[in-house]
Length: 250
Image (cartoon, rainbow, N blue to C red; front, side):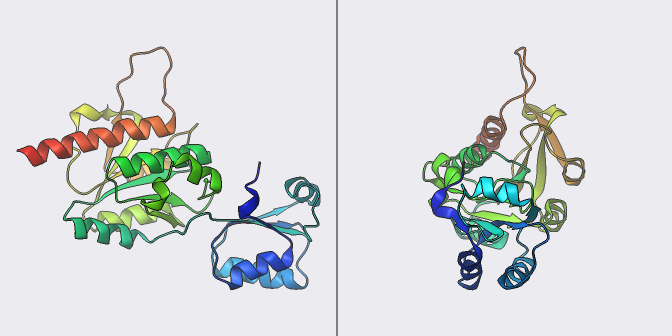
C-alpha cells in the first residue's frame, strides 16, 4: 500500500520534483521506454543516484491504481536526509562521543521507524541507511517513529562498507549485531561507537560484517532463535547507554 501524499505518478510531476530539489527515494520506469521527458527524468535520476527499477507496464498499472502513469512513478522521501558529518557535528557540539546506528538492509518501514525512535531515546546522533534494498523515509516510517524523525537525523549512503571504513579512520568503532558474536555483556561498548543492525531475515551482510570491529550477541533463553530487528537494536543500544552512564559515574 503506497503513501498517497508521497507518491508521484506521471512524467511531469516526477520531472518537476527533481527540478525543485525534492528527494526521490525510488524511481520506477516502464521497460523499453526512454523517449521524450523520460530521458530527462533518467538523466536526473542518474545525477542524484536515485535507486531505479525498470518494470513491466502491468506492474506500474497495479502500483498506480489504474492512473495514467505514462511509464513512470516515483516515491518521495517524507523527510529530508542529512550527511553523516552533520551527526558528528552534533556530537561535538554536545561534547559527546559519537553514537551512530547503521542499518544494513532494513526493508520494513515500520521497523525503520521504530529504530529511529529508539535511536532518539537512546541519545544516538543519527541513523545511517543504504540507498538500495532498504526502506526509506516514507510516511509509514515517519508514523512508526512516533515523531522521532523530527529530532533524529538520517543519512543515506551508497556503500555501507566503504562508509564504515572511512569512519573507522575517524576513530569510530563498529559493533555488529551477530548471533555468533560474543555476548554484549562481555564487551566494552564505550567511546565513539556505531551499532550495525542487519536485515530482518538474513542479518548483517558478509561484507559489512567483515568491516566491523566487534560482533555482539544478545543472550537468549527461549525456544525461538532471534529477535525482531528493531527489538534487537533497542536491546543493544541500551547496553551501550548503560555502559556510557557507568563510565560517566566513575
